[in-house]
Length: 421
Image 1 (cartoon, rainbow, N blue to C red):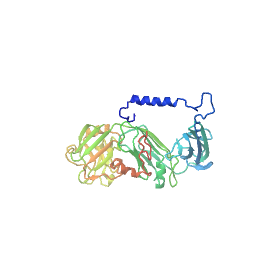
Image 2: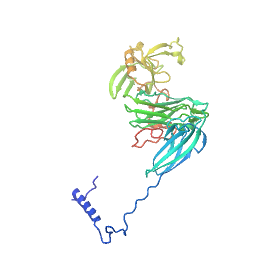
Image 3: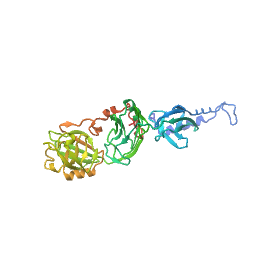
Image 4: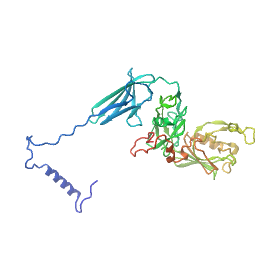
């Protein structure tokens, strides 16, 4: 940007003045050194570039019974690049990756049990010269108490724009271990989007973006918890890694006042359907839901929630095109028996009834994680009754993190838990 010029000064005159200054600086003055004269002081020598240093502060050299998800803590100075690798006695290596704790590195995959390793840290300085530090340790024997770790999203799956990343544990994760566990959970999105982790309960942690995922987003997820202590005698059974994609934005909005379901895809209305919601004695819940489970058909049985099949309000019915919204049994589904009521009045036991044709069309066009919003019914969904991640604001959502939330820097190129997303 050109600085403000004095009145009457042109850019050309500014350049000429600058050129004159350069010429003056190059004109010899009395006392200046002459060619070949080395007696005068020349230009100062550039300051030497300080070399890099590296020290491994943990695990201690010769440590035993180290868990297979161990961190290597590195203290380095004047470092332009740091590389870590874990090498066993047979020469097999596992690359290290940066931990979310500054100055620490973790294995890029779970280490083997009962195995001696050398951790090698190579720090390259600003002068281009590398220095290396090493430590040796032995991992623990395989423990007898391994907690199952799993993901709701399958590798390669395409999901809806509301879909959270959900990691489940087979045992309760102790409160004092949740921060350490969460620091091992990484979500990288392309394009980058802000998000946060939220502990729904002791066994289940979710990650959702601040706003719905952008259509076409690519997700890369790692739960690096194989061999990590999760509380008491329990250790994570394995790492969980997967990649997934986000599909088009497919939104279903149900309005109780009009008894209509409106479908929009990427912002354009593509279909409107009459519905019948829960009758006054069993109202549907309002709130922000998403498609959790899809089946071509299911048996709906009132006895499963304490209402005998042969009672006045009991039933056992084979239902087609069911799509689950809540754990306590609200669905979108085909209900040919209520087609005369759909668009006019509510007669269901709490589900959103659709005609057979509309229910089949909807089922064939949805993805797990597509959002569903139901409005203006007699009650509101309870938190945790289904994947209710979008039923609270993002500011409230981040309060469920085991680590204080820090928004990512504006220049961040990816989302990664816990602080950047």
